[in-house]
Image 1 (cartoon, rainbow, N blue to C red):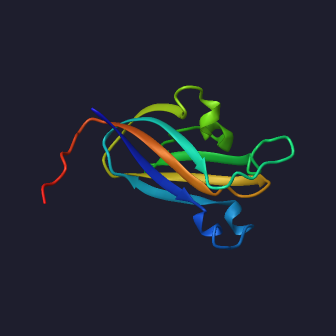
Image 2: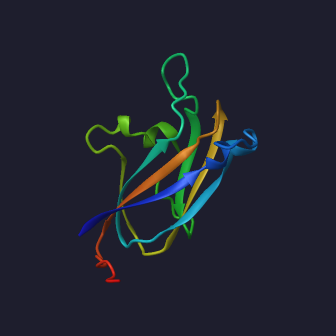
Length: 136
């Protein structure tokens, strides 16, 4: 068994400019290259912008994560559910569902107020199949 990490970026084009209003909702997709148990998901923001109360500017962003078939991996949650500071020692939102190798994941997001999210979701998978590195 090994812990594997897979990152899915969201709205990273905004770092170089772009249409902020258009980036407030959308879908980020990628394939998880590992088979095993999806232990958890966390979000790493690329911006540390804060509101006057210290909360993230993008705090009112709804997130739904599902697999290829539309099976929800999470319910509709707020982006704050994926920030490491909200999960004590684990540092991620615990999921505990099986995933297949190359399973397509869709992250559906919608910012209701504030700036759109910019960063990456990190999927933590306890892999059952350890593939040794290739000899070159």
